[in-house]
Image (cartoon, rainbow, N blue to C red; front, side, top):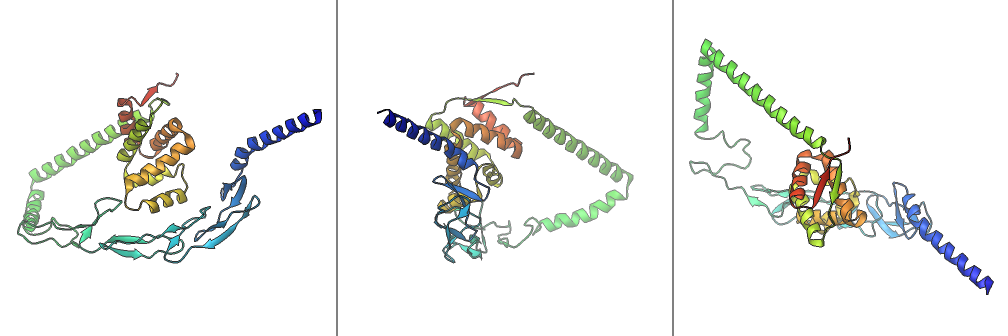
Length: 310
């Protein structure tokens, strides 16, 4: 009986040791490795995917190539399938075809344009000049047509006349001084705003969020972070493969792409930690967006800030 109890206790301790060392084992995986069922497997190279995972740590499993024109992986990865190639729509043309390591690139056909980064639909260029003639899409400056030429000709005559007179020189000097003063004032304002942002309290208190409050908070980030800065913000936590996979799954829906990326943040860090880390990362990337989001979340009673101790 005593032997059985001792064996049971030993088995329990062994199981506990295994459970305790699993997160540690995951943390010991290298930068070019991924964690799978207690093992650190070496990434497959770009252009391939994991057909079979490794059976020992620090070795590579079986990697199969993607199918040309069907799928791709742009980076070393632990994906179990390739990302699907982008298919250009009827209102688009292919700039670059999909290869094993690069997704296809599309653009609107001539005479059409996109007004947002997700490019859900190409819109026809239909601006018209006052004389009724349509402006050509390839025109580099639509303001230099028709009547505007008369204004340019007038400027050609006015400028020499002003320059030839003392009054003209005085006017030009005043204009230059006024512009410099305005620029200096604007720069001072920006510096003041940025200074206040940098000096904002370092401690953020976040309330316990319900599911609806979490969604509303995510919506604030999606709305306020500039599209051109979104990937840079996401890369502070997510791998390129995580981002590419989500974009491929929701190719024409930027809002859903952004929401799915934020869900990964929440699943990895928890509700509170993910919001605090998002704000902290954004503060170093886009201070204007950080200030706007912080203000909105405070007005919604989502966060409160406490001054750092002196």
